Amino acid sequence: MSQSQTAVIIPAAGSGERLGMGVPKALVELAGETLIHRAVRNLASIAELIIVAAPIGSEDEIARAIDAPNVQVVSGGPRRSQSVANAIKVLPSNFTYVLVHDAARAFAPTDLAQRILNELVGGAEAVIPALDVVDTIKVVDSESYVINTPDRTSLRAIQTPQGFTREVITRAHAAGKDATDDAALVAELGVRVKVIQGDPLARKITTLDDLAWAKELVGHS
Ligand code: CTP
Ligand code: MG
Image (cartoon, rainbow, N blue to C red):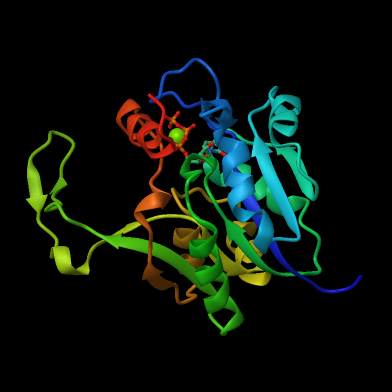
């Protein structure tokens, strides 16, 4: 098998509960385009293969919504990490780099993915985009009493796409562990994770406020 360079994994199997639109979030339309279609379109030029993890039962609908070459749809799992792991299972071994990108960050520009990829080509094993944190963050206990206040200058809000060598991302998911992002599993291996400047356009569409931001962006209300 000849060597291919980059595959993108898009976890899109969430239900979109906080958005509350009654359909999986990846199928929510903005300006006539589903979030999954937009996410794929923005990353298509940097990848030879895109693997999308779809909600169980919505695989065909997701495949129809994307309608692009070099896209493979797999069933997601009950947690994001399991959805990514299911995609890794079908990832051919001839890829060198893997970017993992939330369908919910459908507006992340191609340029951000390219900058992540450039770091991998330059020798990094794990690269993630981040924005500075503007609010003061507090750690609280289960009864909402403050435990401490971490120094804000050392905090970052992490986005996707996150980039890894195929070897590292495969190893990170081999034990079937769960985390809210892939870099956390990679860091557990002792691999150094490089943080680069993120992009406000890579905002995760989680709530109706985020959807309003996205509608504004595409010029529809
Ligand atoms: N995701 C996934 N499989 C899951 C859960 C989430 O592939 N079992 C994906 C989502 O589709 C999304 C990304 O992980 O692209 C980030 O998750 P989130 O924003 O939490 O999306 P949802 O889980 O759909 O939203 P909610 O938590 O509000 O239900
Ligand atoms: Mg979720």
